[in-house]
Amino acid sequence: MSMALIAEGKTIEDALISAMKQLGVTDKTEIEYEIKQDKKGGFLGLFGKPAVIRAWVKSSETSQYNTRPEPVTSLEGRASREPQLSAEETYLVERAHHHLQTILEHMGFNPTITHHRRNGVFFFNIDVEEADKSGILIGKKGQTLGALQHIINRLIGLEEHSETIKIVLDVSGYRYKRDNFLRAKAQSLAATVKAKGEEVMLSPLHSSDRRVVHATLSEDPNVRTYTVGEGLYRNIVIAPNKQKRNGVKAASKPPKPKRHYEDMS
Image (cartoon, rainbow, N blue to C red; front, side, top):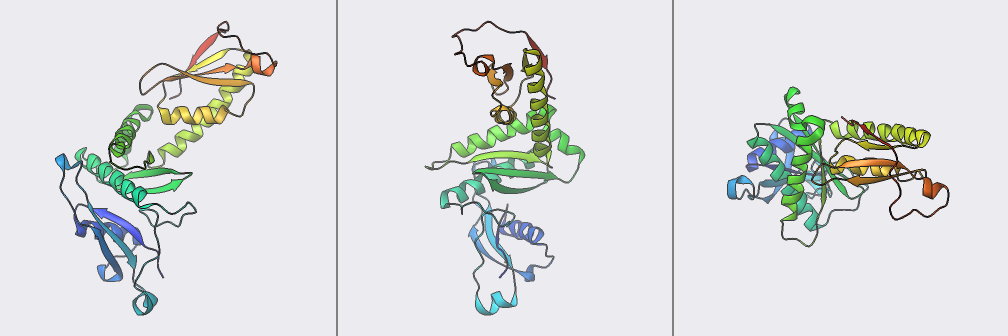
């Protein structure tokens, strides 16, 4: 029995085309599908509902013995070790996909959007046909991508459901490369902080970047990290954890050590 997947589009026909691409077939007669939701309009296209189908490749076994597809937990039909999605999670993922698709099309992109879930977080990857447009969508230091991610999470937060989901956006693998850079940079700077005993303030980072830095250094007992500033982009300070290292309780207002600034672009 072939794996099923969920596909969306402006119309049922568009959803079928999307499903065919994801399943790697070129003829509609090669797939079977069921309509999960027909298209519904919305204000400025943002709160409407797309056409949604569940599709799978035909097989002799499927047609003769069983017409029901296997369960699916992601738009691209990947097998997942994560727990199966609840009905509310499935709905919110579909809404996030729709909002993202609509916004990107209004921005002039023709994107292919896939997603997977890892450790309870939904990672949406955006691929655009024109490679040079990826940089526009990412923006300087990922700021455009970060702002778009913030909007999508806020829109999902407005849905009247008891559950919520966390969404992280990526463009053509940028997030993966960025995370690796941040981890390596954070570890290198931590080594400098320990050697010199001076604080390092990082250039303003989006919350996604800050989480990577905090997590990377959280297990190092000789440094500590904290955030300063306000707004979507804030600074992280990497400081020597002398009080903890020497077993002395930190004073309420310890003297400020020397600090230098580090660009994280």
